Image (cartoon, rainbow, N blue to C red; front, side):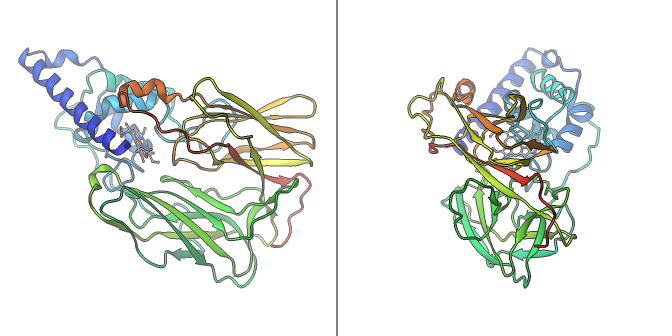
Amino acid sequence: MTVITTKVRFILITAIIVMGVALAVQRGEAHKAITSKYTYNDDVFPIFRDRCSRCHVTGGVAPMSLMTYDEAFPWAESIRAELVSAHMPPWNADDGFGDLKRAHTLSPNEIDIILTWATGGNPRGALDQKLPEVALKNEWTMGAPDLALRMPAEFTVAADRMEDTQEVTLATGTTEARWVRAVDLLPGTPSIVRSAVISVKAAQTPPSSSPTPEHVLVRWVPGHDPEPIDSGTAFRLPAGAELVARIHYKKTWQFEGKPLTDRSTVGVYFAQTKDARELLTVPIVSPTLPAGDARDRTVTFSRTIDEDLQALALSPEQVPPNITLQVEAVRPDGSRTPMIRLNTRPDWDRRYWFEHPLTLPRGSKVEVIANLDDPDILSSAFSAPSTPRAPAPVSIVRLALNVVPAQARPIAP
Ligand code: HEC
């Protein structure tokens, strides 16, 4: 659906621009439309290169490259819309609520430059100016992993499919328990590897009032910076553990009707220390969400913490798309600390690490306000006139809070 919409939108935008230019040229006032003091060459390209090129580059996962003027300017209106709604670059957590590591957000100055250019006639700059070529980067950001586990075989997304998922179990072959500080994925075919979840295969843990070991090693999305965990905390990998890699593939419309294959590699980075604290998880689960029209529905739920903990990270585990989640810690004395405000977007779930561990004394509550009002209803007037929205397929909100006990001493795995 989105694919067709995108294509139609692209054609429409191109048509409108071509018409506009033709009219303007006829009237001999092409230059008059340009109000932007910023040009692609001098001002916009450097931002696109730094902030968008991990995905918007030839061979990248995004539907189009933005690395040349000719590729970028037809998308100006779409870029404006994505920036105004804070959909791009994909980060989805609000600035200024909670303190998150490595936020992928644009500065106000960068936003101003792009919006001015996008709405002010999209000037190119000097015609003879040569910009550096930007090539796709597909490499291990943390260097070669200690353990590289390649998918056992190629996976093909068939010609008649736009999306597909493969789930593979990978033997680690380790002979002793190890601490893991980070896990990453190196796509074989970056243009279709849209997201992945890599976990330690483990028996289902029964519901518990205490935190349980975290089995999800990484929620990978394109442009992912693997997060080596700080302060001696790590994931525990039992001897001979198996990993489950669930990879979601998505083709962009250029590849419609073509089969594409991928063979990605999972990279495991062991912690160098002998002793560490194990990263644990506490689920925060909503009651069943009210069904019906997705307007004006706010649901508040919380989880009380039964022991002294430090919270390190939070991830959406199961969330309906296009809702807002605001998470705060409420201490027994009533004081509140913002943790995150998140706008959920399909397929962009990641683990958000707090800049500093948050102390949650026993009796604290982690409170979630879920606003089920779909903000996209407003912008859909632009993107897809009168397309009925599919009902949200997820009827609960489930977040995973990563913690360590406040008193935990580092131990051997
Ligand atoms: C981490 C990868 C990534 C980064 C970084 C990124 N994008 Fe995207 N972008 C995507 C993907 C993938 C899509 C397709 C929609 C989706 O899957 O969510 C997309 C879609 C878009 C669209 C909408 C295209 C359409 O179909 O209408 C625009 C516009 C856009 N991006 C602009 C930008 C700009 C501008 C930046 C940098 C400031 C940026 N993006 C950074 C991955 C990225």
